[in-house]
Image 1 (tube, rainbow, N blue to C red):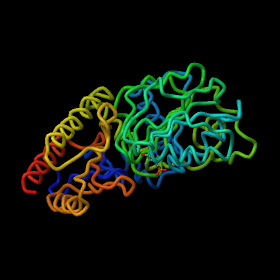
Image 2: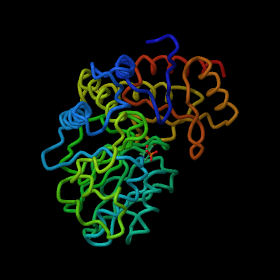
Image 3: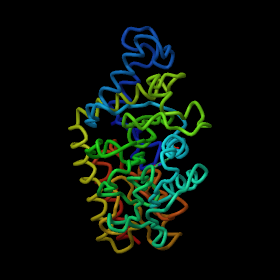
Image 4: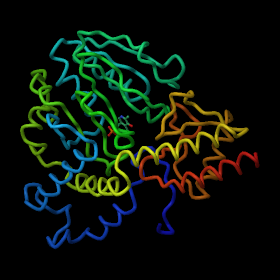
Length: 361
Ligand SMILES: *Cc1c(COP(=O)(O)O)cnc(C)c1O
């Protein structure tokens, strides 16, 4: 690693794999003899179309996305999907179920109310979103157009360790902060979406994986750019797609593939996370926000209970090369985001730092 690089625990945008960054750097002014940067290419040129389709193919291979599912490369961020999901899917029955287990599912729930009758299938705010509801606690409506949940709660540091069973009701999942960190049975889902800037690519790309047949029922006032059918029919090229981010996603996927695919990512994920959880649990000073059994393998939230001491921790950690550990203002304390690209060594060194801080204070 370059001497200047820090261990960046940012929740997103976040670390990208160094080999992907280095390849982008090497190709930045002349992409493989084309005489131009990927940033300068027409999105309809053969050279870019090859990048585009190879990236789709790699994602399909790595996530074992079955035939009968479309892969879209869109803009407007994961938050754009808070609107796109109800606009496109609620038309079937006018109703939908939402599990609200954190900040982003709460925002999606609020947004969806504009478009239909939305029920809270679960609400974990009673214990400050520190846990994930069990299957038998979900209040399911068999007439819902879809069931919506967020697989990893980036701000609160909890993660679903199961895929809800909803019978015939299509599952919609926000996987922004844990996509590509574990194998997923895509055939269980109607729609999976993710903003790229946590585990995939720079900000500006949103990946949507959608089962064929769910498009084409959008509400009549659905904005053109949010219409799944338009984007499926045009293979995400109704307008200019986020070309550079798609290229970067391809480079990240090459790195994932070279490191054991999503099964390899899952091993690394729990190697990092378990090490950090064990260190924090055996400390004197620190408490974890997420409850046992609900803890995230991607975002580890913790605090001392003393704001001044938390601030001291964040400051001393940054000075030691561990940056962006301050927690989100909704939870306070600290958050270590340890996405795919965070080296295990970065977490080992952070654990050493936590132990010496624990001893010194
Ligand atoms: C970051 C994040 C979002 C918001 O993503 P944007 O691309 O900034 O809109 C939504 N959901 C989850 C789970 C996230 O982690």
